[in-house]
Image 1: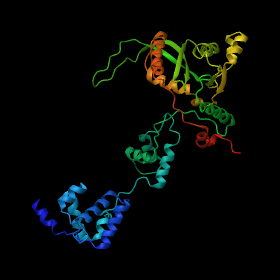
Image 2: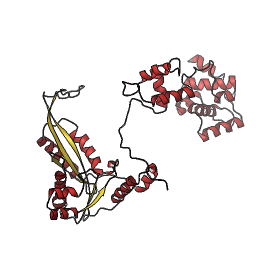
Image 3: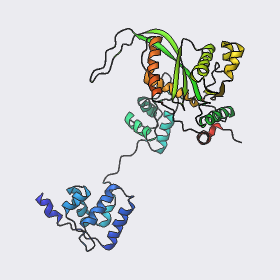
Length: 383
């Protein structure tokens, strides 16, 4: 340490007015690399000219949160190589390693990763790409890690696939139905005209054949692969997003008659005091006024038809139905496990439903018609 302190005294920083102005401008702009800005600050603090601060090394180290060796190197480089050398990037003594995938080869790799995988394979893997790029003579050799880093730059993940509902392009029917539903969602809450979204799903009933082993510290819960099938149950989700209310009706089947009785419950039990119920649902074949005539006498069916204001999401646009989103919450929070029978299913859903309704959990919907005309512009016909 003593030898270093003596050597530091040899490297005295004395800057000209022009050099100080250049360093201050560099720091003021703040667009240079962090290390270059640190060097500029060290020089300004170590400068012993009339305009300089003339700080000691220990004070500079403490103020700038840097190291002894960093201050020493900056002083030495200024004295031995000059002012410009301190701020310029040091050139490599040896040339860097050439890239395996240059622009052209990288483009070919990306095209390959986006192509159909080989027969017998569901998707491209890094190992398959490693062999294929050599086979196609794109490169002489490349490791799977090199291919992975190259694809990562372009955010390509060949091992992943996402299922999505893809609507047709320039479809006027889709656009008309979508804008109709979006317009309904902008209406203010009206107790006389409550908004209710309707959707359904099924749940397979599975019973355990062996008692599961509960979790322990450092070990997850374990259940046997074998299970007993007990049929399926259908779930009708009725969701009033502005009321913070939802109700799930569990049925044995999913028929037009079951659907008709769900609408009767909405009209005569859950919202009996409402003048009109604004109903949003997808266009499943049983979601029609005809289902009411199939289940009830004509006079009763007509009475129920007139209790609703009917709105349908477009084909391939069921994501616009808020009841579908609520079913997703139900699935992840309550149904993501083996449930042995219908009675247990009803009890578990009732507990989940009670908690959600007690908290008046509502939907936070922001997607509007103006958003749709920008983000989904490809769905609109060109006029």
